[in-house]
Length: 416
Image 1 (spheres, helix red, strand yellow):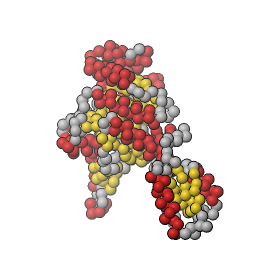
Image 2: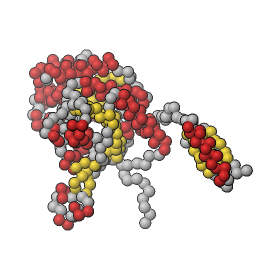
Image 3: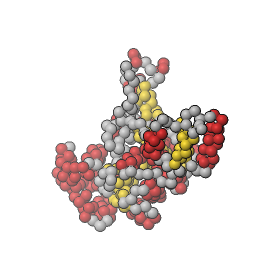
Image 4: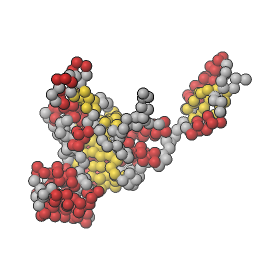
């Protein structure tokens, strides 16, 4: 039986054209984030299954690729539960590994610690456009900074990076988990039901206000609470300053420092930004991870029609490892979706070195080959990209194929 040559469902082989773009974009991301003071780290692709299943990863915990115990530890015949079979899992994001990393190395790291991570993650998700089961994430996080300086730096670093890649006129949608909770409390929803309410609210962009009202009613919530809740979103939409409107309407339900925090972030970002984007307050923004404790944000790029990254503040996650909470905030670029958009728009990597192909005829004397190789090496030291290959019988077709790969000059070497 022949082996299967296609990759497993939800994962993909990456062709050279895409790989060039991926390498370039990673370089831009790395260089830009380093200019903002972030330090690159790396964590393992696997984590202890208990770390990944701590009820903070939301729906992603249902999508973990779990790893069987190995060797003598794997006892299939006597296993009574999943815990008897599984001890590791493939990481579904970079935030959980970062918190473990920080908890393990905090004494050797500066405070605040500005971390940059780039690496693959795995989710047993349903594959679709821009969504895979193995995909690259590019995260920046600031740990140990309790003030909104963290949010401001994260937003500016991320938007500067997107601008350098070539994206314009996108949005950074921003909200606050405490605003979400205050709106739910003001409307009369029980605190234990907030997550259910927020899951429905998160569908607003797809089903609209009426759809949200219908789903809340199906869950059995009082008509008065639903009407009061949805009126808040209508009021924000009509208000000149949505945050100020909610501050006045919600009153004591909303902590005063939340309003000040949001206003300071907007003022600083709008004053300092160099990229062409708009910072938009969006009270319907939820973010799926239950570990978020404060500010949350997402990247919205019109060409994609959905989120191309996001993040927020998660001040209690490190405490799960150490027993002591550490303020933390992070932002992740949707790398795969960014690459998809660039590929679809025919993006070409700028400032590529000149590509030259040396074609050597079959039977070329070995004594002269050293001179050709030396000549290629000299060209490479001058910044050229030189490919040394044997000449095919169909030289015209060979050059046509190389031209498609970006080779713009050909040097033929014949045996006579």
